[in-house]
Length: 208
Length: 169
Image 1: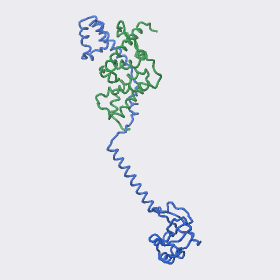
Image 2: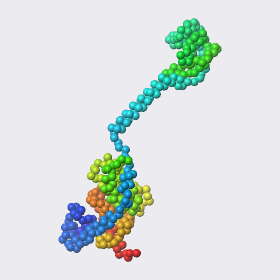
Image 3: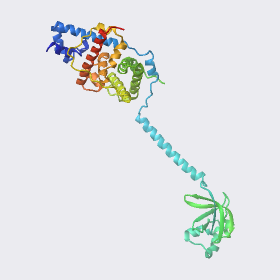
Image 4: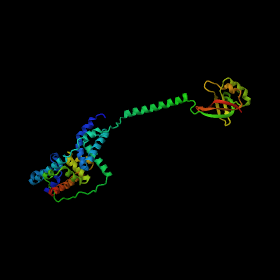
């Protein structure tokens, strides 16, 4: 190896910390034998140390460490056990809320979609009509009897839609409607629906 | 905010080294502080993913370097001037020449080097990292690291030589 080749190899040599690095071994051995190369190497290492020392003179401002520590972010730790517990809690909570809302609507909001209507049609004895399809003048006497006895009363509108007729809470309208069994009347009242079944809370009955 | 002894210990151990590396890359104290700060915050958020705690120093330097490269992409691109190759003679710079200049002048010389050469050279001078560790930090092959350090060092020595022969203003 020529002196220049040895210098090329030793250009990166930093001193004791690179002594064990195999890439420098041959050139270092040569530097030990060649005084001129040895002197050049010493100069190189001194220069390395001087530059290193000069670069390490730079210091950050006094409070950098404290600033970094002060503004440290608090990471969101992904604890899967906790996340699963949270997900289960959310699902249960949503489920319970849905059940509660449904129950409340059924129990305490019977008139949630209440609206004023006027329906013209035949007064029905609902039991006979639904069970046996009996209506019209030929069934009037039986219908009057059934309605008077308190069986459900209804009205079949001109459009064919059937409504159950009720009175205000704890007040039956059967007695008022019994005389109109199988006759055409006009009912004015509040229409509501429960489970898809239409009903009218009667406010006014007019004979057609 | 509750204390985090592990984080505080890490900051106190490495903030100076990271700051110096950042300062050598950016030549700006403010940017160096920001880079050091960002690096520690990345660690704070990803510490659980760090597979080898023993490699934390290398990991911190890698992260700072990546942050620096990300910033650089958003800024005006540097003119990438390759360092001259083939010095007929290896410049010899006595340590006295280095001692006569101040750190800021030395940083200004480093700033003239392209960052791809500057980063390995700074790690070579500043940190007690092996060449393999420098390669791992910068995520480039070992041969490339040594080649870049060699060429950048020659360029730096050349600048120091020129500064030594120029009369002081």
